[in-house]
Image 1 (cartoon, rainbow, N blue to C red):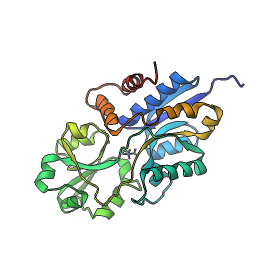
Image 2 (cartoon, rainbow, N blue to C red; image 1 turned 60 degrees about the vertical axis):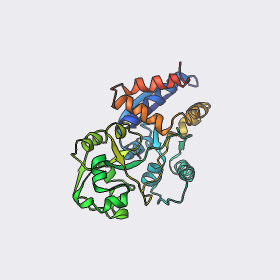
Image 3 (tube, protein in one colour; image 1 turned 90 degrees about the vertical axis):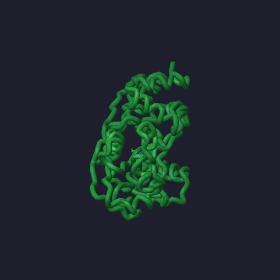
Image 4 (cartoon, rainbow, N blue to C red; image 1 turned 180 degrees about the vertical axis):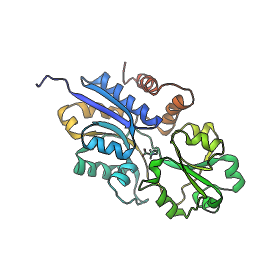
Length: 277
Ligand code: PBE
């Protein structure tokens, strides 16, 4: 019936930042709409989330521009394109192909960045990915399983820079920083908004051939849900630019370094921003 309360399923990927953002969206929607909210956090990786949102098991989650553009849409990346062009093209193609809407960006960019222990980087004199290529045959490389499968992942990276790492290790994305710090892995694919990069004094190397695209975080939602809830889009777009790279790193640190729960971090942040009571 027309007065039946609608429901929205909010989900996200399986790493700290995404769990925070899943709860951030969920708490915001709970406080600002009449919708029933179901949370499915830590569902999986980008490909699993895409399946779920396409078939309607999930209504909304936060995706990153470069991830949607290269991995889901399979578009080739041209480094001459601006982050705004990548966002606009991604938005347009998702609408056409999947009837999924890209809302306004949250305001931060979380890219992959090759990182290593400071003492090792300094000993080898490595500052850029091209520098790293000269030493790669004596170094081990670690990343999460998804990176080895992605269009913006391992194979393209190796082709671009000619890396010849002596060993490849698959590791949970939330464990790679410890592993680098402890010397278990030499080079990791850090996520640049992770607070453990600074905490463990890891050095982020320069992607001097611009292999990685921009990865701006954007809530995406099934267009049908927007159509059924006329002022939802406007409300969700109040989340535009509420975060910066630094702020997201700080929130991630509250979970990963201080042991707070992701949902608490999300709620405290929304309250501080005046977005919930
Ligand atoms: N990222 C970097 C990845 C993981 C970390 C945001 C580009 C992604 O989830 O697409």
